[in-house]
Amino acid sequence: MANREETIRKKLLISTALVGIVVSGGVAFDAVSAPEATASACWGQITQTKGKNYTGCGRAVHFNIIKNSTKKYGNTVGAYAWSFEKLCYPNVTQYGMVRA
Image 1 (cartoon, rainbow, N blue to C red):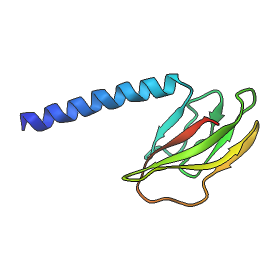
Image 2 (tube, rainbow, N blue to C red):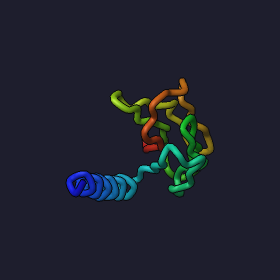
Image 3 (cartoon, one colour):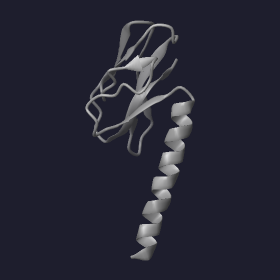
């Protein structure tokens, strides 16, 4: 039981550190369970299927991270535009927007 708790703690610490590094690099992430995110001044209204690129941040693209698969990207957009996913993917573990 102690090994299981220790493994969970390690995974939590690693996940927290990785999210901190990624977010500080200009990436807006959100957990799949959250209905909407506004974690970045550059992007907002981010859901599993879309995200809006606000002005002044350059081009951006929405993405989904799929369990046991490659990252899937939506369309690349400029200011005041929506990036949409082409499909609704099963087994999404994370989603967000990044600079394109």
